[in-house]
Amino acid sequence: MPEPAEGVCAIVLAAGHGSRYREHADEDKLLAPSLATAESLPVLAQTLTALSGVTERLLVVTRDDNLPLLAWLDEVATGFGAEVLSVRSNGLGHSLAQAVGYHPARRGWLVALGDMPYVRRGSIARVAAAIEPQRLVLPTCHGRRGHPRGIGAAYLDQLLALDGERGAQALFVGSSITEIEVGDPGVLQDIDRPADRRPA
Image 1 (tube, one colour):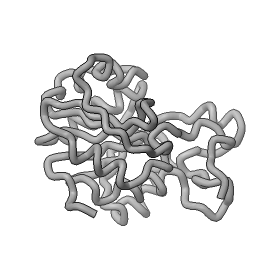
Image 2: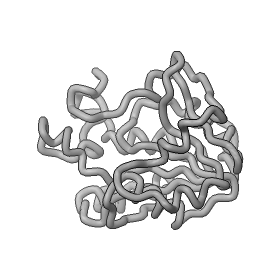
Image 3: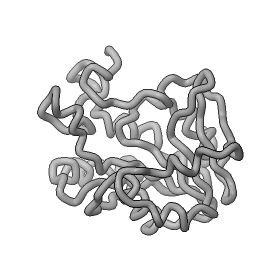
């Protein structure tokens, strides 16, 4: 594994309510097993395992009222080399704005979603390595755009202005995007419902 990407902060967005998951199971999807078996790592633990050590810094953003998740992170975050930022958030965009304000980065940010546990570590590393201040980077799988995404430090002001649920998608509508084909279906798959989990 290459050295951590210097000047890059990985941000794991984990401040949602997971309401679609809770319609089917009364549990926090980030703490639910990542595979369709109770013996597997929790979803967020699997996500953090893939991200750990890939970038210079790793920051998990969660809601300040999600006490079970905060208690879990208090026990495990240092093992992943992660810091925890608890926020009062009105949506994904607002969480991201607070995260980049908390951790300015020299080259930029690798923005990952906490409920995407199947992204391969090598895919993450390729995106992280391509981040530069003026660049927007994303992975693709068979031509479909996925996550995590790289946002250069030059976009700080646009990120700080985010609010509500709308994240940084608007930055990725132009043609000047660096796409990296990784052939990794994990970059396209999040966990919205229990049935989305891969079999053991």
